[in-house]
Amino acid sequence: CGARFAAVADATQGPALKAALAGSGIANGAGPEAIIEAAARDAEIVVTAIVGAAGLQPTLAAIERGAQIGIANKETLVCAGPVVTALAKARGATLLPVDSEHNAIFQVFPHDDPAQVERIILTASGGPFRSRSREAMRGVSVADACKHPTWSMGAKISIDSATLMNKGLELIEAAQLFPVSVEQLAVIVHPQSVVHSMVEYVDGSVLAQLGSPDMRIPIAYAMGWPERIATPAARLDLAQVATLSFEAPDLERFPCLALAWEAMRAGGSAPCILNAANEVAVAAFIAGQAGFLDIDAIVAETLGIIPHAAMASLADVLAVDAEARAVAASLVARRAA
Image (cartoon, rainbow, N blue to C red; front, side, top):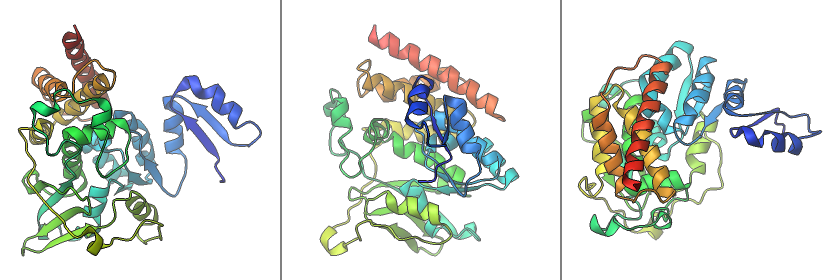
């Protein structure tokens, strides 16, 4: 495949990686520093897809050298949006969104004249519990939460989709990627996941990007930009889809989305606190230390405990992230006790 360097984040797996690559001539490393080295190496495009805040430092390493970046790690922009975008501008790095929603917006957004935009409308599938009452979600299992109706994803993202926190994180990310105000962002539930997002213009026109729910399409767009490259993804057959439905999100049944709105409006360290607390709460749910409905409660309580402050550097971001994780972990322990 022509690889020159391979890295694994888990330092304990370093010997196994080295053994597997013996005689290949491929340099390798293990641990967080090795991942940062991989991101900093020269490449035509760097795709950052590490789940969670762990993707922040590798992404910044790629930005430092002015790389073209396909960004699939939304937490980087949620935790440190102003720091990341300021550095990208200073270093001449290009941020190309890979998330299907932001990629869709990127494709139909008037980059040369943002004043034409009235609203950005992010679509959400609604997750596996779209039609369930709040009470019916109380005893759901991790397996239940991971049964996404449209996409096949890892446990963390699947659970975030089940709580609608994933859409909340995407709202915060959109506010960093595109020059619009918080008031110009909206969410609509669209179970078929055919319309990947929309841009409404000041004249009332709405431009949408449609396609089969296949991540190969936005990945290929980012990899080939500014050209398009062919993919084997299934072509969209609207006659077979037949119906496209939409509904407003229910913020009472899915308070994680409301918490994300609040954090985005508060600004400063609030989105970083939101993300860190959510990562801890979701990990606790997966480990059987918290219930599904404890996730939003832990996030809300953490946001209420830690004062929101401005963040000007990576050190500020890491300090807030660590504090929020510690507070959220203590809340998990209290519930477990």
